Length: 453
Picture 1 (tube, rainbow, N blue to C red):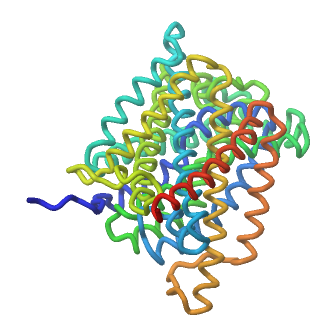
Picture 2: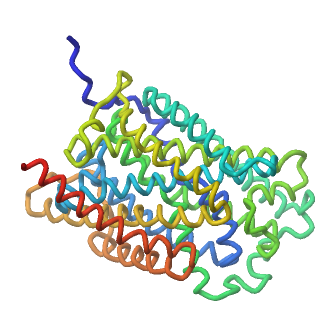
Picture 3: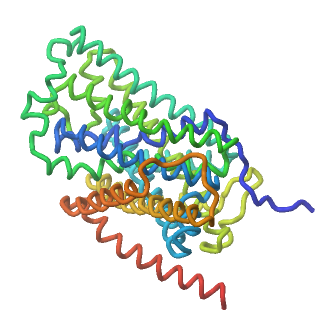
């Protein structure tokens, strides 16, 4: 009789990891969420993305050091368990699962919004249901299928943004095309100044800015299925800051230079809006396809990461044992089944509250992500102390500025959390968070009591 499969397959190559790391940072937070953020903060949004990008750089360098110390699929949940204790490890694993479930709800919501660009009569809940079903089926196959899907999804996003930047620069510098007469970098300060509403609106956009960066930590989840992780993971981590400069700051700077920020529609993707204004035949429809691809990419990543996190929790006895099993393709199918079932709530929300669902679920998702990023920094500081005491081996890839950088970024994450209170739609996350964490504490002690009984 054959033995049950217990280990994930290392089927992700260097090109998969590199594009997953890029694709994880480009989703609806940039393609759709930036529209509302620009409407609030104007060109000052660039400052929010820059500061948030610096914080993400240190978070990823901390994670990169931990990954080269021990590359495992559980990643930050495993490090939290080892360096902070079993309760933080339990909370981190389940909170990351929760964050990605909510994120997928946001991604499929975006798909519903984008499809209505062509077919306004289609109910907003139907495209999310179809997208979730297709990607759910794809994720039940071998991990290499996920890697290939994500590779091409991410490549489409990268080519689109690079194309926007190159085309936009040509329009601004050579004054060609439909926008050539008015496009100028001076649009960044000519309509009420660079900070038209002051600093507070910039702070209020930190919620959508940091949600847009959610997914950068996904390379930590791929650690257990990456080929040659000691080489691939540091390389992917080091590229984070360059990708932020190009894909976020570069793209938004060009968009707000091509079209005055006051003309952008807060309910429409600025990418679709600007490409439509460039006068290229069918450009808006092409970009709409791209942004649907971007949302599908993040949904694909969400199904991947939630399945792996439930697998890790099941292996540690912190989730039902059924989640610790792999199918013949060495994929954690039970975790994917359960995650997809919960993600269907997003379809229901698109039916009940289609106008508010995006802001609500992105805010809720951000709570779990902020906890995950925070625990990475705390676990890293604890790891460094363990290395100094001789209890852990030093990793060859190190985070600069520790431990001061750890504490400064933690303070920034607390500020982002506090800013959620200022918006009624994002405030719901602060109501959900205490209930969620209380349930996790109860669940942890109940699970421990069951194991020791």
